[in-house]
Amino acid sequence: MGSLPHLLADPSSQKPTQLVDPIKLKNLFKSQQKYLNTFFDKLDHSQTHVFTQTLLDSTGTIFITGVGKSGFVSKNISQTLVSLGIKSQFLSPVDALHGDIGILTDKDVLVMFSKSGNTEELVKLVPCARAKGAFLISVTSVEGNALMGLCDLNVHLPLERELCPFDLAPTTSTAIQMVFGCTVAIALMDAKNLTKEGYAANHPAGRIGKSLIFKVKDVMKKQGELPLCKEGDLIMDQLVELTSKGCGCLLVVDDDYHLIGTFTDGDLRRTLKASKEGIFKLTVGQMCNRNPRSIGADRMAVEAMQKMEAPPSPVQFLPVMDEQNMVIGIVTLHGLVSAGL
Image (tube, rainbow, N blue to C red; front, side, top):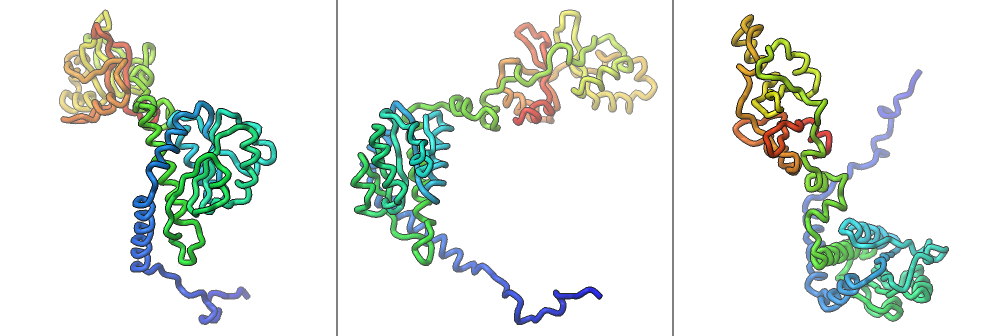
């Protein structure tokens, strides 16, 4: 016979329900805000300026290192710099002492993040990095630490205390390290006059990048894929063309491929409902929209999306035209979405 442990268990042995006290939670956020404000109020901006200018003037790679939580922050800051087009790399202090320090040169800057400034792995790394000729910078929060006396430059990040009730877990110190690093990164971005287009070029797979890089000609269907017909063609003779090209429409053109109008599957349904058997005698030209929206091939793909969604009613496609009003392609909403826009 099967047992029923969940029914027979001693109630006194069950784990008590754990609840988050909303008042304590609110107070924790207030405390963290207070500690962060201490950082902002006491930060030495002259130190920060020298630090930022040093990074800007570097002709080599900006290596950033740290241990534990500071190591995770260092990786994030380095990746942010790379995304802005700045040469940077995270250097593991442990791996550096076992061969990876060979990547350092006398043109590089090595930034070491450490709350205490006494992290053993970083202190051991200093003479090795100095032997390679790199410029050494410590970013610390405890005054009078070992790294301060060993590096070429030190930046002090003021820290009142950790949010942790024991003042041990790095909860506030890592937050200010991240704020400091990311703010410096944006200062470098500004100093280098990085444009939105330049930023997008570093993020080609992201939506931001695609919206600023992709043009209509990059995502449109071209000749051979276009659902074309003439205005004198009977509607019923063009059903295969209407449904087989995956555009949900026909582009009505003359003999020189100038656009006359468009005829959609919605137009087909409305015509069938209104004309019934009479649809067999109607031509596409009689029922097409002779004033459709269109777009040029060199316009941005995101502009095509905006044009499709514009009032008075959204559309699912745009004919793509050249300067002579000749049809050279079609861009569809499905195509834009598939491209990640």
